[in-house]
Length: 516
Image (cartoon, rainbow, N blue to C red; front, side, top):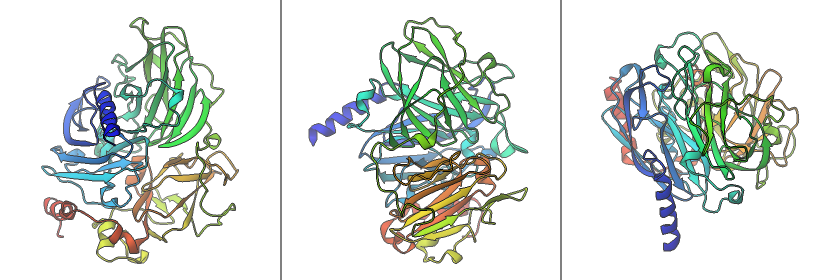
């Protein structure tokens, strides 16, 4: 045991040494306002540690997380309170640390700190963290979180997997989120925090360096507020081995469509001539698409290649990633029986828009004045008694659950994320087939376009209030969400909350001048 602990600690130090900005699972995370210009246009932002994206948080399987979030925000336009969600982590017995404002906590006010303490005993893979208060993460508060597996079953497929192989895709706005009007469109695509604005495409681009002959595990994260991206690397194929923290059978592709909040790991063999190659991330919604003058791009540079921009050309994709073709590396029984609706609890989510709000089964999600978790701890059990009325569903414990989400509502395709779980995608967008044998598991799924009826299943083995929402942040802000209170009767016993958590709401109410 002592040797194993020392070995993991040594490897973690090696990862942290790659770049100074990475932090470990026991850290202080300062949230600050700072003016930056990642595409050449300066603006004030909300950042973790004053950098964009925020510093990667790296850990090893089984590590305990103790992250003290210190709020130093002063810009009221972008909100001076905050909360941090650890996207993709289940938070078993620690729902209070999920970081979802007005669902699992009140926000952390400026000048205060709050420590998120939680165990991650059995999850590994690629995750991320971001503000979960209004649209604050669109102003910059987002970063990667990676949990490494010392016994990675895919470990023999690659030679390099460290901070240098993390690739983040982000939309960037020159105007603060709260000041956006109409349907917001991002100005620039940032790859690893750098990109070119189409209005003055002269900024520095991110460069990812590889050595010819080596195999790299790249961890691709869409940390955008809105767009999905068509991602490719000229001259190279990608072997996908992970989706949203779930190991998959290797699948060779040349293009990955990655939706907001999704993550993929892929293995790339640096088997091409020493040169520079374009990395492309074409957004579906942006003020400028395509790749003219290096927009929506980064550079893959082989060691020994000249320090210049690539001359490579984009190939026509012949192997676009098909989610329905992804299979889990280790198959687990799909909850329920192999027929539509043959589960303990089935729910159809009818998604509409009334011109102002998105509605789920006729109701927009409006954040309640009292967090749902606090309502549970205060004795609320019945779905009819929860706030916001009509947006909270109670789920029975240890039950098979099926959710169907017919597409077609304006603003799609909508990527839906479920907190507290990974789910089985038994019917994917673009497919009419149901897979009850070996469907991919993940935590964020696109529901596709009109005619699609994406269907997911999961088992209620994690007591807590869990948000299901569209991860286009503008849509969440306008109501596209519901809360599932899972096993309400056992939450109080299963989710012991710390004293500091109990002080968040009184402190927030006082600072916001709200009567408690």
